[in-house]
Image 1 (cartoon, rainbow, N blue to C red):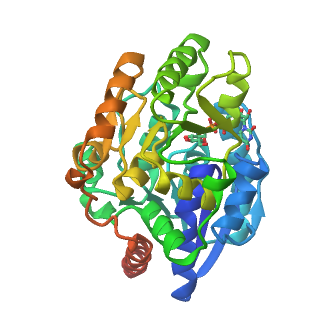
Image 2 (cartoon, rainbow, N blue to C red):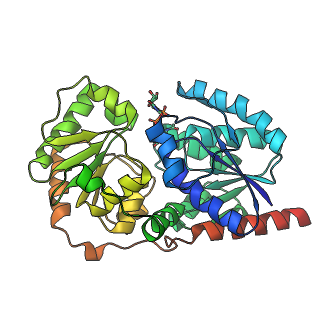
Image 3 (cartoon, rainbow, N blue to C red):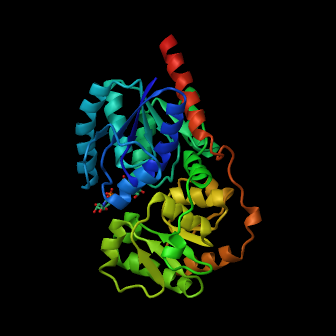
Length: 361
Ligand code: UD1
């Protein structure tokens, strides 16, 4: 089969890499399209190298913009590419604007779409990603989910169970491959970190775009930083906002890190404080405590089974939960079923089965 995989933004790259590896190993044709939603060297180029991704067959070069502009640019640029490359199926991953835009194009062209990471719901429609998830899952033909709660969400929305396959979490394939096949990184030494430390990431518009909110969260991080040194690789959106605030004294800011460095940093840390989706999953796999600075999560299994706690944005609560997490015993944390490093193979199985059934009519 000829499979076209789409990537656009940083959290897509580690989901596409394991899939491309397994598709190739099993003799299928692979095409890769990068929409260019993320374009900086440290948001995109470094990830292609670190993850062993091949250069994309097409780069759409859409760049930044408002949600409507970005989505519209991807739609216009992706349509002729699909018509030219004529894949049997298009695989979209995650919940970024590129995921939604490419799904929409394929639906209108009657090209089958499979969505990896389907069924996650925060039930918060102020999040652009929630809109992307809802529309993508409504249109995609094959919904490949990471965990049973995602299957339940889809069934509750009336989705035909024949469209749903629980395949597990493909980010864990990338993590396992990284630690089993790639060299360790010296990032901890390079950053001059000694002893215990914590890792921070923040980039959600709801946390960083409003100066008072960002100041309040940074205040909590400064307080935690008194007991545990914190290092904060800064997303470009956050970096721009932090420039309008006083320099933090106890939180060490640095540039965004590549995949090998960042995964090493997280593996070696005592605690993560974040508003990222993927990090809630990666810390669950590592059994490292994660404080999620959001009111909700589309990944509740990381809270019910894993090491994640939802803190909201109240600075006092963030501090209390961080201190409590450092005292808790990691033995109680569980890694969800099918987060085992073999998800890409289950996806290839599902694609083969689905396309064969479709060919039979
Ligand atoms: C996007 C995704 C989000 C994901 C995040 C991970 C959507 C709706 N959002 O959000 O789900 O968690 O990526 O990083 O798709 N910028 C650069 N260089 C880049 C990319 C962005 O400087 O390579 C700057 C631009 O000023 C841009 C801003 O960062 O306006 C935000 O980027 P954008 O892609 O709009 O959204 P993210 O916040 O990165």
